Length: 339
Image (cartoon, rainbow, N blue to C red; front, side):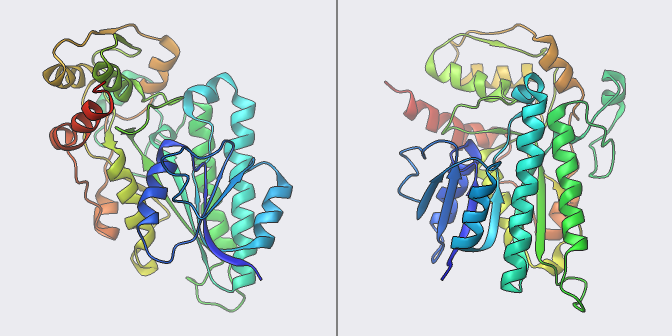
């Protein structure tokens, strides 16, 4: 008999660790955590079962389908933006091929259960693209259906997987069923940059802000790899996790689309540097532009419009920039690096 569970891929990443912590607090949730590496000690006891494996391993996918009955899949595993530019073929294999494997698993699960399996996919503002800074600076906060012209492999992967989610949602449903009675309930968020106090980011092109903050808290010098005037939307990790759980808990009749923008604040790199210096006045923070990463960031929006998320599932961030620094980031980092 198959075991009832939820599946989290990429469970050992920044978002995976936060999501496992949040879902563990819910009653009667059997968490199956899948990652290439063993879970961090801080969360290893929170998952009911831990699997080490690759989402490209078809044998593993078949094992999951045979042993478990998933009502929800959180597919977080991915090759992130900077690494994807250095290894575009590997990025496509993991980000697209792996997602196809998980979508097919969800369809098989939905067919066997006779109910739609909820499927969460984290997308990114990397799906947007501008021809240059002039177009970026002239654009207002970007809505979901505008400027979807990715210039990076990561953005191409994410946008294609959004389309795959739409395709699977609309083309796999029970014969004779009502329109909303699908085998898969695909829901996605286009995340801005995310700042966490718990983990140091790796591989993301928007990581200059969390890297700047962590370095200052540790007393280490930092060279920001983008210009002072570079602007992107950001949010804190607790708000990102809250957005995921809120979206996934929303009644299906409230969901008008499969993909949503969310955001909290959008400082320039220099504005954030000044906020960091207010808390860590001795921090050594300079700028040393990495042209490739700067080009990637310049192709992404300075801000996004999250009104659809507010309307459909009452999205509202807890933190703005001030409260994020005062109530979450700085206290946690001071405690983490006090020695």
